[in-house]
Amino acid sequence: IAASIEKLEHLEEAKEEARQVLSNDDFQKALRLWQEIEFLDPECAEAHESARAASMKLEEQAFLEEKLTDIRNLMEHEAYLMAHQQITEVLKRFPDHGEAGHLLEIAQEALDLIAKKQQVKKDGIKAFADRDYETAVETLKEAAALLPQDEEVTEALKESQHILDRRNIKELSHSGKEALEQGNYQEAVSCFKVLRQLDRDYPGLTELLEEAKDKAQRSEVLAMLLAKAESLWTDGRFQEAQADWKEILSYEAENQTALEGLQRAIPQEIPPIHPP
Image (cartoon, rainbow, N blue to C red; front, side, top):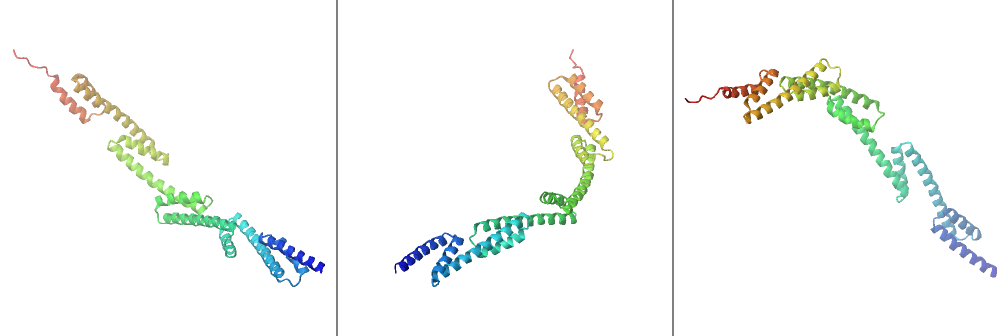
């Protein structure tokens, strides 16, 4: 009897320890303890159920670890779509699993970025096909930054930029020549300088730029002389003002302001008539 009592006490102690271990999620040790109890008491229903529960948890852990290892490998090789699918399966069985949830966020962000890359590329290629080269260049530059190894994007961007540059070259040439003809010399210089950046070998560009620079410089000198002559006239220094206007006309014979200034100066040269 004493032996039986001692055995029962030992079993209760063993059960209590096994329950505690199982509640702490130490399934490997819990399985071993409950299997020992089953051996000592083959009729113990709690031992059978707890041993089966611990075994199932161990199987789940093994399944989960295998899945997570596969998912990590897929993520490492940037197979985000497959990784996303497998993470979703894991979360169906383990909805509160922290690492799986975190991996799902990373995979989703990667898939969103991939979708963005493809959309930007698609928009750029479409703009190129539609001959909207300004939009194509802008969009394909963004696509090239996202997809630096994509040859289709690189070639489309290169061709779009080339076409746009040729168009800009024609426009710059026309605007520069028009500004030169209209006397807007500084604007002409600006146009020809930008044109030189696009095509240094553009026919006649060197001569056009030099002409625009010379005329812009001369225009600045004339503007200073005109301002000086007007100031001299205001101060009553008529002969000095006249000299400056004549100098201006030596540079630009049809300068209207200088011609008008000389017309004003003529009456000042006639000596006053004093009465007898």
